[in-house]
Image 1 (cartoon, rainbow, N blue to C red):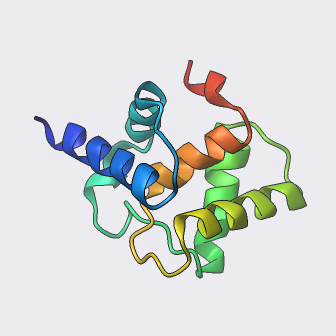
Image 2 (cartoon, rainbow, N blue to C red):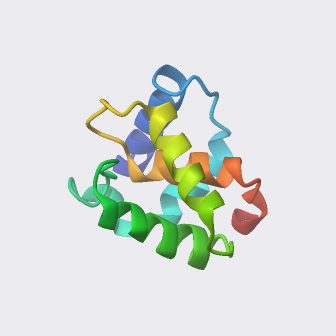
Length: 113
């Protein structure tokens, strides 16, 4: 099993056990690949739910640039909702899991078509 496959399995486990969702493995794999080499870096592979600049980066680089959404309060609300679902006290919020949940939230699976 490759390192990436191990991480995807870990992300699917987080979705199931921490977020109460069953992962669409094909989409999860595409989102994970889309994160690039950041998934192998301990700091870059996670999202800090309490760091405003980090959440701005998620909004600007992922929601606006990658998913093609327009800026507005709905983006901030969606990020807050995903962080809440993952669990505010959960220390390791994996970037791929957060991106996956945001992709599902906005029904933007077609971006990874």
